[in-house]
Amino acid sequence: MNKKILIIQLRPGLGDLCMFLPRCHEIAEQNKGYKIYLLTKQNTKAEQVLKYDPFISKIIFIDENKKKRSLLSLYRLFKNEKFSKVYSYQYGPKYLKYLFFSKITGVKDYFYYGIFKKKEDMIQRSIIANEKWLNIKIKNFSGKIFYPPPKEKYSNSVVIGIGASGDNKRWPLENFIEIIQELKKLRFEKFILAGGKGERHISEKIISQLAFINFINMEDFNVEQCIEEISKCEIFLGNDTGFMHVSACLGLRTYCLYGDTPSNDSMYNSNIFPILPPGMDEVYHDDLAMDKITTERVIEIIKKDYL
Image (cartoon, rainbow, N blue to C red; front, side):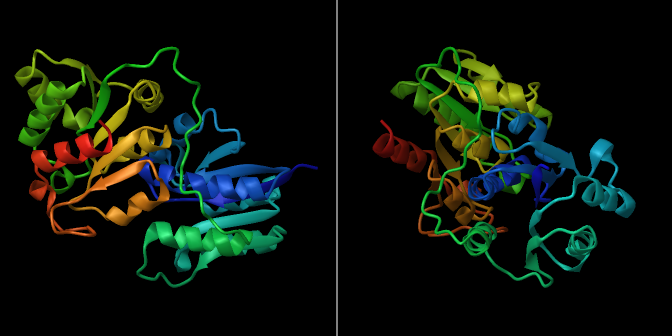
């Protein structure tokens, strides 16, 4: 009989999935012989991100076809799959249903954060949890997306992350235009614009003002196509967004501009190099400091660290 583990990670974004990938892989490494199931949300695009992942056997969406699973559906999932262990990276009373389903369907070990949510760092909390749950000491901070190596790499290439979940989390357009020109003066020749359809107006302005630049615009690509394109590149520079995390998990040297999102979220992956506003050691939500990061500061850091 196949032994199965269910990992519950219900944070909704592509970046969230990437940030918790190391924890999922640690669970798999410490539970060899188990099939690993992941319960998550469709917006993580897990079916594309984890297409080649050797650790994850099955992906289950809590909101398949944009309709949230009923309690009966969740109960049947637990009953039919007969999980041996459940690991849940969730807080709060509403998640006690998973503990209840575990107990009545014979799950031997159930690990979860607890009933009452605490104000604490998301990444640090997950690391502490895995060290306790798995009886390990985590020393290697690197997330990984498994993807076939590209047949050819782009030389002198950079992914420009223009996407963001809000304008307050986005570096100003004029800064992106200026930094691309500065990178061009160095040695970079190919620029991949990483943003979605919501950033179309930004990518169009960049391309129209820099017609002499060799761009690839990924706004109409699906996530797997973006992964393939990003895997061909050297570095990433841009906002704290899903494609930033994808780049880091593909092994790119990833320069992330933090001015309004928690800079400590970068600690899960040693490929991420945070660029913060001058005079700030950490950045949090609502710091509203993206415009305080100058192009001169960014170029100076890249030249010193990479070139």
